[in-house]
Length: 613
View 1 (cartoon, one colour):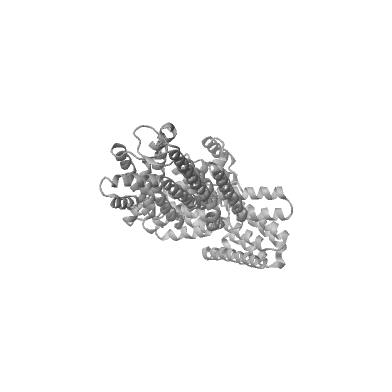
View 2 (tube, helix red, strand yellow):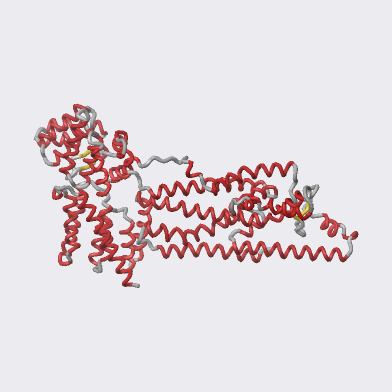
């Protein structure tokens, strides 16, 4: 078993590294040597690929982290995943620690590195450190936008199917609780039309009307549930409305969830996430660059593309994109700001002054232009003019330079902050395939196809039928009632809860013989045994069934969900979605915990139902 796990881990590492290197190779342009980020990663790759050069791993990682800092990046998930996979594969504890430290610094929000680090801490006996790494990993599952999206979407089928199962089980017990009354009322009505034998047949047809019409079991349960409204309290009828509404929207919700799971986030959202979270993703960059054929005349597209290329370490291609933006929109200041900042990084002060002065001419209140202009003037030893530009930038920004731009290499030059607004402008200028790629395919929450489900129509059928039958029964056909003493169905004229026989036998004893009293007592005992056994069986077979059998629909449903939700999480969510969410999370422990909660509550409920009369 250990060899299989080791082999699977080695294969996972190879697949992750190969996929990363292939993506980088596909993205890298002809002038790959100009990409400083790829060059730094290549040094790490060489140290990983050659065991004899393992001592070069730490310096190579240091160089990569310095490059990440120079590019003002906060996250490089692809490199971090590759280092985590390599650490999982490595048999050298020292190399594992170096790789994990590098993985955590390259992407502080990557959960995998934290969970693997927790294993390392646990193996070394540092339980406090392991708990800290594990807690950080769990928080990262919610902090990272990709895992948070998948986690949120995966909860929908878990709770939806749990709710559906709980509702069906509770409605089934509730229908069985009142089916005897429903049948006796149907028989009572049928006898007014037909003779005795035909009346029984008609009563059976009335009770099984959806099944006789070929509609299925769910329709039958909803039909009987609608008929029970005449026998229950107001709170149960209100709960019935809520439950039927849930059945109406449940399948559309699952259909919308299927659409969301099958479609990745639109490219525009991914680009916005990369820009605002300063995250490096070569695959998304390649997909965005492919739109240049349709958006070649969009200055906003070229600015966004240039900033992405600069973030990914390719300054030469970024310079070309900014120049294209300046040509496409000569009267805007943003491309000139980007070109001026790049020229300042290269210490080409002449070009920097040209671009920055041009930007100020187009926007005289541009704080960033004055700030970078002050740096350019200082480099040309024009200190008085530099102080004047710096004072202007300070007055416009209120002294908060960190809010006006992003630091470039060296930390003195600032680049414009490019985010969602410019991406939205690109989206406005896009059309055809480019717009679909950026905004995603067109779909609506009100799509009729989402609602064309049998369960939805069954819920609508119940919502329509239940109040109509309730009003008719209340006006023309009063519902029968079970005698609380012997269980016999009777039709009271007043508010009594006892049938006529029980009133005669137990309240007028002097007028009834001993034999009749004994026979009635035996009947009451048999009914008590039968009803108690049914409630106990309902409580054992269905969590919350005992409360439902007693007529408490809401309490029975809530108690059922307390058991069903953790058991569905153990049996369905963890195997199907949990391990896809994060492979290194200790899912076996979570499954055991959920099973313990669900089974524990079920057993305690079953024991309570068995010993309760």
